[in-house]
Amino acid sequence: LDVELVELVCDVAQWERGLDILGSGAALADFELALRHSSGDEVSFLVNAALRRLGTGEHLLEASLLDVTARRRHEQERSELHEHLFRVQRTETVGALAGGIAHDFNNLLTIILNCASTLGERVAHRPELAGSVGSIRDAATRAASLTTQLLNFARGGGARTTKLQVNDSVRDVVGLLSETIRRGIAIGLTLDEALPDIVGNRDEVHQCVLNLALNACEAMGAQGRLTITTRRGVWPQPGDDQHARAKAGEYIEVAVADTGPGMSPEVQARIFEPFFTTKRRAGATGVGLGLGLAMVQRIIERHDGSVFVRSVAGQGTRVSLLLPIPAARRAPPPAPAPTRVVEPESSLIILADDEPAIRRVGKRILERERFTVLTAENGEDAVARVRENPEVMLVILDLVMPVMSGEEAYAKIREFNEEARFLLCTGHAVTRSLHNILRDARVRLLHKPYSIAEFTDAVRGVLEDSGGRG
Image 1 (cartoon, rainbow, N blue to C red):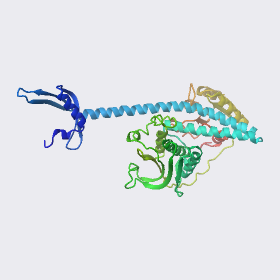
Image 2: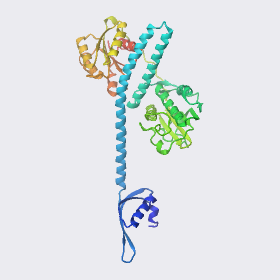
Image 3: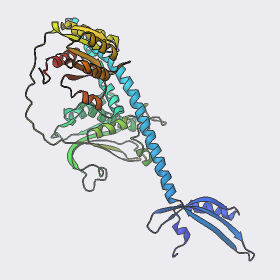
Image 4: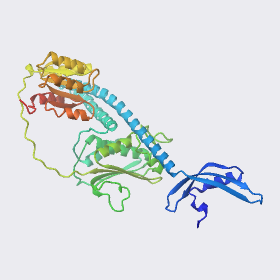
C-alpha cells in the first residue's frame, strides 16, 4: 500500500478505541471498522486482533478482517423495510379509525342539517331565530368539511374537484389569520393576479395553505414576518435547488415563508411522517397530532403536485407547494338526458339506514314530497322489503350498515329486481367496488352529510332519469 492504514479509516475515533483496547493487553473480538475503498465507497469489516509480545521484546499484531459490507447493507434494507411496513400499518390503522368516526359524524351532521333546514322554514318570519338557525347550518357544513379532510387524509383520496382560483384560498387564509395571530407577526402578501384556474378540491387547498401559515406563526412565536407568495412558472428551473425533484411541467407555486428559528436537518427529515410533531417540545405553542404536514403532502400529491421545504436553523423556513396547471380541454356540452314523468303518489321508496334519526327525518322529508315510504334498519331488512314490495321504484341505501352493507344489499336486490333504482348514500371516498356499481345506469350516489334540497334533488334526479332504458 502507498498509504498508511489510518488514512483509510472512515471513523478515526473508532480506530483509536481499537488501539486503546489492544494497548491495554486485551484482544479485539468482532470489532467493527469501516475503511475507505479506492472507489470512495465505505467497506465494513469485523476485526479480530491481538497484540503478542515476542521473546525479542518486539510486538506482533495478529489480525483477521472479515468483509461484512453486504451483510450490513442487507440489514439496513431489512430495517428500512420493517420501518416502511410499520408506517403503512400505522396509517391503515388511522384510516380505519377515521372511517368509523367519519361515518358516525356524517350521520349526526346529516340529522343536524336536515333538522336545521326544517326549523329554518318554520322560523323564517322571525329574523332573530332565523339567524341562529343559519349559524347552526353553517357550523354543521364546516364540520362536514373537516370530517371529509380527515377521511381523505386517512384513505388517500376521493375528494370532489372543481375549478378553483388559488389566490382566493390565500386571501381567505390571510383573512382568518389577521383576526387570530399575535400582533407582533406581520403578514406580507405577493400574489400573481394573472394566475389561471386549476382543478382541485377547494376545501383541501384552503386547508393546506392554512396549515402551513399556522405552522409558520407558531414557529415564530410572539413576533416575526409571514410571507405568502403565488406565481406561475415551469419547474424544475436551472439553479433552483429547492424544486430540483419536481416533475417537469407548468405549475402554480404557493410559497409560505417565515422568519422563525428554522429546522435542523434531523427534524426536516421527519416532518412529513404522519405522527411526527415538534409541538410537544419545550416552549412550543399548541398541541398537535402530527398530521398537519403529512396531510398537506398527501393532499398536494393527490393533486399531482409536490411539496418542498427549505429551512436553515436560525434563518427561518420556506415551504413551497407546486400545483399543476391543467392543459386546456374543450368538449361540447353533453346533450341533456331524457327524463320521464314521476308521480310521487304512485312511487314507493324504501329507505335503509342504521341510524334511526336519519330514517325518521328522511321519511318525513319524502312524505312531505308525497312519496310513499317504507324504512329498513340494515341491508338485510332492505332486501326483505323489496321482496315483499316488487313494485318499489327507488331503494335508498346507506353503504355502511350492520348485518348487511349497502353494497351487498344492492347486489342481492339486483339478482331478482332489475327495474328498481338506487340512491347510495355515503360519507366515504368512492372505492373500486362502488365505482363498478355506479356503472349501473339506474344507480346514483349522494355524499353525506346532505341538506334537504340535496336529498330531494337526488331522489327526483334518479327517478326522473331514464337511465338509458324505458
